[in-house]
Image (cartoon, rainbow, N blue to C red):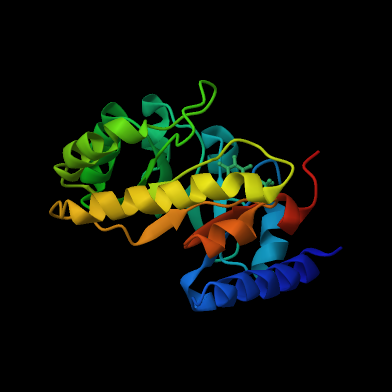
Length: 228
Ligand SMILES: *Cc1c(COP(=O)(O)O)cnc(C)c1O
């Protein structure tokens, strides 16, 4: 299917899932995950109306960002090494994958050089999987407090990648838990911190994520087709 058709179908499914949960469809934004897709494919999606893209790999992203030639907005969603942050400064409007203080400090340093602030999400490893990035739920509040003290970033919410299940219902408890953790953080009323965004849900499980409160769904395969 063409990307424009995929985007239209996704828009309908996102809106239907939002309505099922009594939410406004406009409360959910699609982050089109364009890792491994060339700039021309991103440009095609942009011409079809998609403006927000998510990337995972710094080198691939920085090469692509300059080549798209359409007005688009980028979020960084992948595991991030501190020594690569400098390449993202000024190019992305949000980083979803902040899971440790040292990384936040480097984001603060690089955005400070620009004299602006970066919106970030704290990635939580809700299931405690050894192979996945993310802070533990137990360490979350302390990390948010430390990150919130940095002047050149703003904590906007939480992100998670649940374990893989064939049945999207398997992921639902992890989405629900991320929503609960966001409520815990919000209740702590840390100055400068908002829990406005929940980044959760991918091609296989975004409807369950929206029903559990997702505001950003990160979808690759269902937009662009299977990655080569
Ligand atoms: C690749 C990726 C996605 C998108 O996965 P699909 O199954 O292709 O929709 C979402 N989030 C992250 C962090 C990813 O790395």
